Image (tube, rainbow, N blue to C red):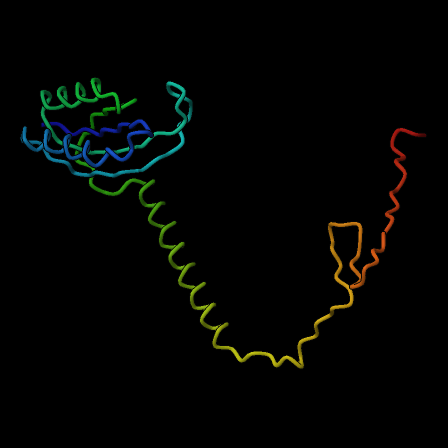
Length: 175
């Protein structure tokens, strides 16, 4: 039996069917005496170029060990499935069991995200536990509210004061 790396792209409209498809391919390989050394679901990703007016696809990677007949049957299943838009089969010298660089980078992102979320939760808890500032120390100005992006200032009465902005003359090209 030989070792192969198989990557197939599933149409994005049928992404929810990927687990059933993987189970079908797994049962075919194991039924014929093969093994799956590595199986990674990379999820929906952007394509490098459009395929049949599709710019995203669901990626799945499998490192398998099987005979030629099983591989031919697997590739024919890819060919006759409308859900699989592309597939790639590469013969390898031995089994590949370590995680791919893409899967490792996704794990690191998830870990940093969870650490970031944990830090945010502790910051919120710390802010809630701090003593509140008495209202006598809080200065609230109801007299004037300045609106940065507007040309008027609300003075707290019915009158609006207009601010005229002076623009610099454009001296470019006038010499």
